[in-house]
Amino acid sequence: MAPYFLLFLLPVLMSLTTSSVTGLRQDRTRILRFDMIWMLVFLVLTMSIGLRIEVGGDWDSYLRYLYRAETMSISELSLRDDPAYWLLNILSNQFGLGVTGVNTAGAIIFSTGLIVFCRSMPRPWLALACAMPYLVTVVAMGYTRQGIAVGLLMIGFVALGRQKLLWFIFYVLAGALFHKTAVVLLPLAALVFSRNRVLSFILILMVFGASYVLVLQASVEQMVDAYVDENMVSSGAMIRLAMNAMPAVLFLYFRKRFIISDIDRKFFSLLSMVSLFMFAAFFVTNISTALDRLALYMIPLQLVLFSHLPDALGRPSGRNVVIVLGIMSYYFAVLFVWLNFATHARFWLPYQMGWAGS
Image 1 (spheres, rainbow, N blue to C red):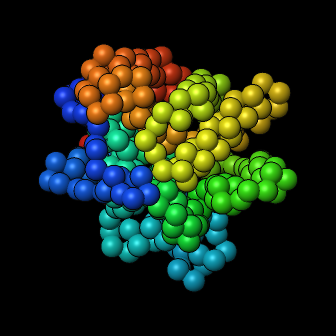
Image 2: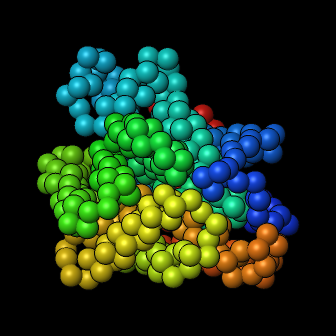
């Protein structure tokens, strides 16, 4: 399990030795800059996620995608759910790249989205460190299709903060081509720009109605392909939902202290309320599998909250090492507990890297 802790260590060290980014645009969003260090981060992330071998609980399920794609033509994609992921498998087969070709393509998309999102935060290294224990290790390395969708959505979140609604819609729809559940984020854009409370309430109901239809009404075969085993996915759902609910409460409480655009403040407030609703729904419904998978789209809220929190609680633009260290201790505990005690962590251990042709 050492490789996972090593991946976590670099952003931790950087987050402890750097302060917040001060350069702001007129709309209070941050200027996106990418230097050689972040290019190296992109390379390391892409290789770690893309070149893994037999890592992740859905590994065998994704191999079945690859085998089925051997006899599939591009003309058949319109008949398939998640056609973009099928296309990656078809192309990887045609070029003889195997499952590693698919995973690496997915890793490039996810890593791009994560880095763009982190660079839009006041403390990019802290945001990246918060992403490593679960978003990178579990989601990107375990749930390939949904990991790609999350990567695209994170770019969409950045676009939305800059009031580029059409680009947000584009990235949500692109994410839905890899995992159809990503479309549940579309009504949130309407909520951000709507001042009508009745319309807002209707749109919130649409989000959860669409979630039910998309996730729970799938055929048995689709559910097996997408989730492998319902018990596996639902195991630990309450903890994962709580990991979003806690930042949601903190964001709603401290949001006025954050240096953030008005659109971002409203959008992530909505994500916070949705996260709290989902956490409450866990106790009064029997849809833990659906809630667990949809909660993956709320994880970026954690990065937003914790990258803003040191400046909200401590000295603005200072290093605020004690606060950062507290946040990092929490995420170290998340990684340690998950790797050592999670029911399905054995599918991630040991970490192996190389080229798996098929």
